[in-house]
Length: 445
Image (tube, rainbow, N blue to C red; front, side, top):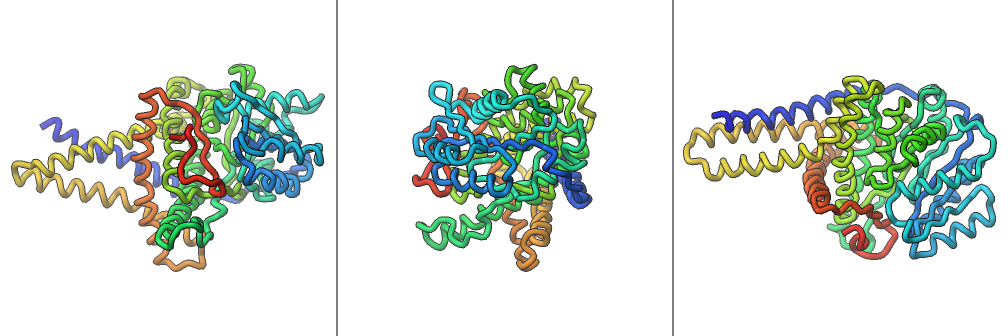
């Protein structure tokens, strides 16, 4: 009787936590206010652009950063590229003194994005003279990233670095190729239709679902930093470096998120500004997409090591502790759901009596309905705010697609856990859409 009761209660307990988190995210998203801008001229801006084999995009990215933010400095970290990334940036640096190339070579190179960013941090320290380091802001931009022109003004306002307690600011992320009609020009109509849906789901995920989550974290005091559009105060990086020898963890798969954890543990405030964003290319290839998300899931599990420090930290409130622990254990919860689903299916198939069958099917139906609705409800919100020219029916269909899209979490959680058990913790670069080749690089397999 007790195992059967546990089997019935545990799925609803997991689902209850998910629904509570979703409701909090949805409410925080609906109640988000506008951001008051600051004066970017009062700050010293430095962009870190980590690169490995980025010859297809890096020149455009650097040129756009310099055009949109002429008072800034751009630090491009070439992490032992095999292509022409280094020479391209070197040529740009020869023409523009505000562009600087940080070259890394094996065996020190290609050991992770965190190590590349730490190299730029050391180069910046060597470059800076006698300046007010609390007025220096470092922004990490992916090699294909494009910041909205108003981003610096938004992040240095009262909600951001205008508050001296703020150490980090994360801005929104949008998918630049969301309206591309042929994301796979070499493929047929059906493949392109699937790729358009996959791209749209990534945009919806970041635009509404992830933004809602970040707005909830603003209330709990546990905002997460991302790898693209991550702004940090230099003095906050200095404090972490003094304690940890370097700001970014070199053995971390989620070096960006872990940096935010380190900042909050050091007493800094980390916040999210939804009124500005950075764009990037969504991945239209399933294999590349799953490779990227597997790394994220595995990095999420690695963050469990912070649970004890967070629980005992005076800088985390109780609700912040709960949110952080919930985030850490999401991949593990996905594995638990998979195991329970397999057990439930087994019971249904092998049920010896009609009683078990009658009891199990309503349970499965209730779990299914309750798990679908939260995703479906995000669809109309996304359509209304980001694609108002589309029909209401399209918004509902996008919501249903989001529900199906969310099942990738079970795949990547499983893959990430297997990689962790096997000791495979290497950092993998995700291949750009413009690069040739159908699959991931050797290090991604």
